[in-house]
Length: 240
Image 1 (tube, helix red, strand yellow):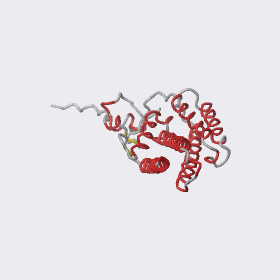
Image 2 (cartoon, rainbow, N blue to C red):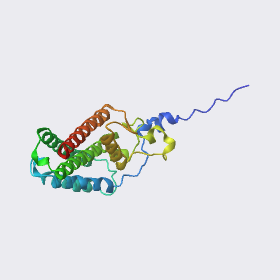
Image 3 (tube, rainbow, N blue to C red):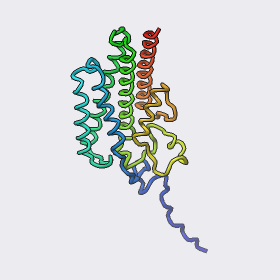
Image 4 (tube, rainbow, N blue to C red):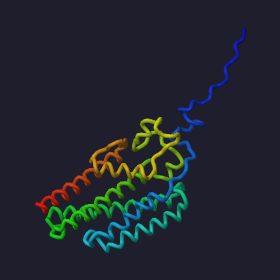
């Protein structure tokens, strides 16, 4: 008796469709809404204007003006939802991140130096707490954009494909049963990550898996610890 040959097996889902790895397949995910990052960026634009002039390397209007121009340019390069993968949009997004990081770093350095050197301008409790809170807020925003812009190639790239091995492991990554199919982190998820990392000084529910993520979260925790520690110590010194 002749045994019929079995038909060739279909490629397993593990190898992807047509031999393309799963992390390179397009998931046809919907682009992110622009409103959350725009609103938070508006706060970042307001912070330098609320701080005294000494917290800026140049005119306090330079950073807000640059952020506003870059935001407008990004909307033009990628109108509507954030999903257009182009070198222009990517460069503008990186430019926004650089301006935010430089501004937040400058403010943190100035505040730290003034607290360590005992600047009399911070002897007033209102000036101390308001300056400390604004600088701390700016660092949270800057690191939010850092995580959001770097993780898995940025928001536009994540709107087209989900990586097999994420750079930052959210609870939904580690337990897919908690999230709908095709879930990926959005801006508010990165904002929550930055806020909790700045308050707990360590990872909470989001685990850094890549070296850049570990270094970035470590630097943010250290900066936040220095700012809050010095502000609280100075406040106690003023009140006693």
